Structures are given as structure tokens and as C-alpha cells.
Image 1 (cartoon, rainbow, N blue to C red):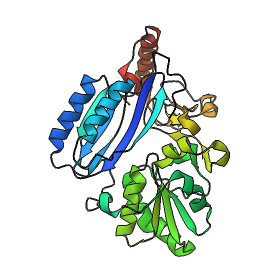
Image 2: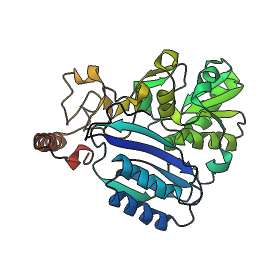
Image 3: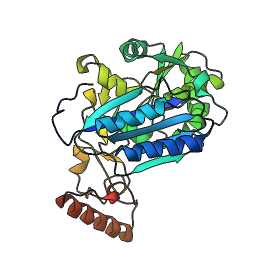
Length: 318
């Protein structure tokens, strides 16, 4: 992706990545990647599991590329694909490289997405697939993500967690298949990891003709021109950008610090929205002690901002 403001000294490279591949020694890989990130002033989150690697990192371009080189040196990750973006401010305030049982938690330990995933559909072929009335399109993301953006005609499971997806499919999803009798199922998510795992799950459940968007919404928004797009709204991202649109340009959403949900311009105009404290969604779910604590956190954030400093409370302490 072309850098529109490469001359800016504050320009930060963001790299979103994942790959399903067997990692035999997760501790060694965790230590190796943590050291590489620290040595190259890179922040963000990397999750390491026996099934693979998942995360988003950010930092100077040379630093991010050095970490990616280290990742590609791990057996099985030579063909790692990365989705890039640029931002003027560091979207992460710390570095976390953690070992997990799954790189995206579905609670289905017997799946092998590296070998069982469905058919990959590149962005340039996605529109034709989902516009076909014999295709059942399913959004595998969470409810709050689907609220701010989705593909035309997609089914929204409205799950609060990816862990809920198997139960949704075995009840409502299975009923949809029986009712509509589609020729194929097409699924999508932010970067590809959840829909890749979901296709493996559906195939394990006996659904054969399953497809998913290669590279996820992020690659689609990067490669498909707005005039040709079937995407509506913004795409939620799990960093300080909060949402992005076509060309991966940062959207107008902010994060409510009370419930960590995205809030658009209309939501911010509500009398119930208090920056750093609450929004329409969570205003009745916090007690006075929590509100006071959030308000003090916001005050400290503002003080840090005035001094040109980052404040860790922007993401933590909820």
C-alpha cells in the first residue's frame, strides 16, 4: 500500500498477520519474537499457539520488517502474508507476546484449519460470489463489529464472542441451511483468521461447499475500489484506530472507555456519552464508584496528552 505521507516523522507502520501452522516449541518462538520486537521498538500483540501465530504489531517500518523477517524464519511461516496500514500515531501502548491454547479462541480443539479450511476467495472474486442468490453469506465477527459495517445481505449471528459461533451454527445456522438450501456458504471476518477457522468448523460439521474471503475485510477494503464495493460502513479493528474504511483510512469511531465498544459521531452527540466514562450502550451498567474511577482515568489521559505523553490507561482498566 502506498504511503500517502511518508515524509512525516510520526508515520507508523501497522502490520496485521496470522498463519495456521504447527509450532512445536511455543516457548522458544514466544521468546524469540518478544526479543525481536523489543530490539526494534515494535509494540502490539502476538499470540503464539501450537496451531499457529496471530497478531498486530506497529512501529517504524524498518523495525516491523525486521520482526516479520524473524517470524518468516520460523518453520512453516515462510509464506506468511501480512496486511499493512499506516498511521500517524502509535496504535499500541505496550508489547504483549503470549502463549495461548488457540490463536483465535473458538473452543473446538480438534480442528486443523491449516488442512481443513474451505476455499479461499480473493477480493476481486468476492463480489460475484456473495451477489449470487444461491450463496449464504455469514459474518463470523462479533455483534458490535457487525453493527458498524457489513457486506450487503450478510447474515449476522450477533454473537458476543467467537466462542459462541459453534453454538449459533448448530442451532440457528443449521436451521438457515435447511430453510434456504444454499449451494454454498461464504464467510468473512476482519483479517481472515476467524472465517478460516469457521470454514474448518463447518466442514467438520458436514458442510462441504464452504468459502471464505482471503485476507478478510481489510484486504478487500485495501484492494477493491469504493465504487465497486459491496461493503457498507466501517470495519472495527482492535487497536487505537478503532475503525477503518476503504483504503484502510481511519474511520470516525472512537472507543467508549466504559465498555470498549465503538461509538460513531451520532453516538458521541448523545447526552449519555461522556468521553472516557460511558456511552448509550453502557450508561446503566456502571455504578457511581466505577464512573468516578473512569472519570479520573480520563483526567489523567488528558493531562498526559497535554504533556505529549502516552497513558496506558487508554486501553486498560475497565
